[in-house]
Image (cartoon, rainbow, N blue to C red; front, top):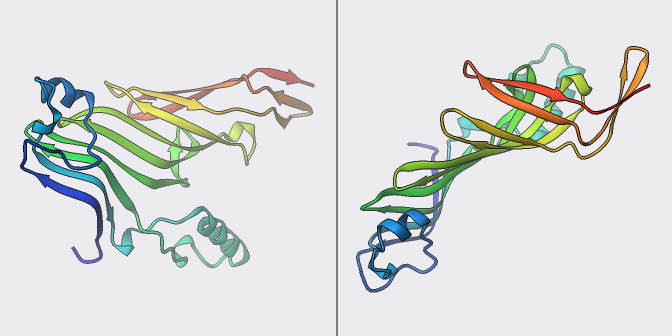
Amino acid sequence: LKGVGFSVNNAVLDLSDKKNPAGIVFNQQHQSSYFIDGDINIWQGLYIQDAKIRMPMQFRKKTGEELAADSAMIAENPELSISDSVSTGRLTFFAQNLLIDELGFTAKLGADRLMTLDEGDLGGWAFSVDNFLLDIQASQLVAGSFGGQINVPQLGKNSLFNYDAVIGLNDTYSFRVAITEQINMDLWAANMKINPNSAMKIEVKNQQFVPSLLLNGELN
């Protein structure tokens, strides 16, 4: 495919049962199923330590600096739209510790900068997906995670929080949102102080994220 880029680091086709490729790492699935007699050197298959696939330029994503420049440009020139700007960031996927053997496919797969705050919708809240990771062992998905930022409109326009999320079985997600500082905001004719021990809860209902807040603080 024209425009697709590949880069591979330390790729080895191992057909020997005497020695393994340097740097190879085996997970628990291989330890229990493949090396029954305890000899890891009997492993055979294709091993790739690191690989990256860069999509063509038409699949580019904007950086935070580019989005900020776009907003400033459009504010000064209302006749323009977001499509008038140009970005050079190429969408890239990566694989780590990739194994193809008689147990199937094993690797950690991921991507960075999948979704910006302008693109993500978390139940009406803007959110980004800055990193995404899947852990596949013996052709089975065993873990998944992603992280980024959430903008909570109820706490002000610029209330950005970092989050991490773990993907579980049966369409379950476990979010951890970092509220590390006291937040001050105006509420009608009063001032609200939100303490760091406040929490966010995010659930999945009808294939949509549904967020909620549990706030602790003072109203003056």
